[in-house]
Length: 219
Image (cartoon, rainbow, N blue to C red; front, side, top):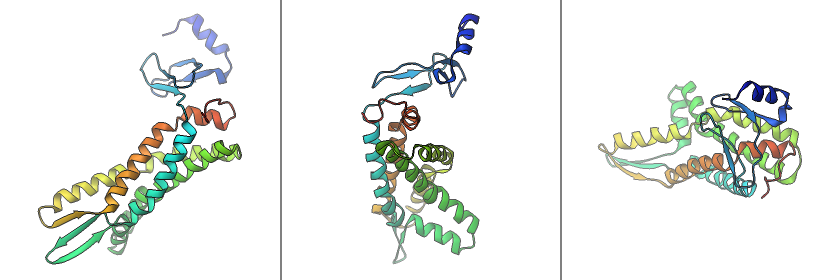
């Protein structure tokens, strides 16, 4: 907690020198960080800022790798089901089509958006933002795309879909012979890469780079 004098001093500071904690709303002076350092909220311990080394290069590599896995993760077989002499192959796309053809069109659209459409849009937004920073062009468009990405974050539910796949495998394994397909490995890899990308792609560094303030984005 800060005293009255400290509060008065914070009020007199320009907005670009202030920061508020996303968790507890504590208002404080924005810290000056060296490369590789991070700042935490003194009240709740939430990570406020971080300057990760080689953020841009690492994020670009992860975004491109995730995009390369996107097609095999969604269109290659997740599992091979052997039941009563018949073999079927299931993919993420075939599951969406089965729901749609079965009359569950609203559910099919929701599954498509959450498991395929929005994750792809998120990756494309991230890649476009990183390229704006890398080539130092279209920063206004980059800001818009990065805001769009933050709005889409809550709707990408690859982990929920993966849990559904695993639950289905556990329930079916007692009824039929199941072989894991290459699509499942690609799907898990895509999920892990997206999580890793969100960790590496430091929001504060991206905002600063898009506004022309960052000295660290390319290091």
